[in-house]
Length: 154
Image 1: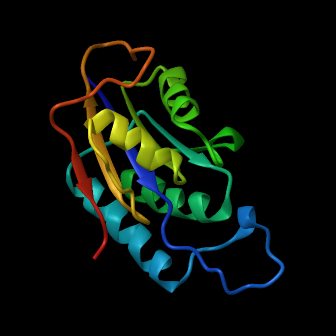
Image 2 (image 1 turned 60 degrees about the vertical axis):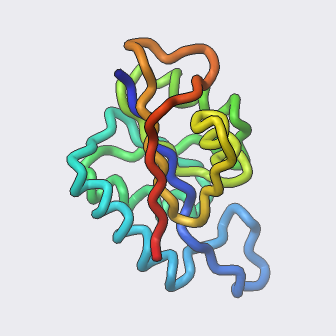
């Protein structure tokens, strides 16, 4: 059994003029939610083989909370900024890991979560969706899985 965990970056700050979308930081809520959600995932005992993040500041900062809480190294990938379902899935599969955590953006994350769940899934900011992937090899396309979970900050 493989595992894919999808995390949408925490809430970002739109209040700083002149910043590119790529350089938007987390706002106060995002700075609070990222470590809380990371700690909640750590309490489950989950430790990914690979933790991948978009290079956008808000995603990297969110991913750093997860890397710290899960005690795993963080790998950034420019391809995850604005990634499609195919790009997200291929990034996970290319790691060769049995368990992969990806921190990235919508709409790609919600679309991938929806495809895996077989129904609409809204990945709100800092939501964590966990999907067991049947088998020992990453399939070429995302399968629909029967059991999965979604947790979001309150």
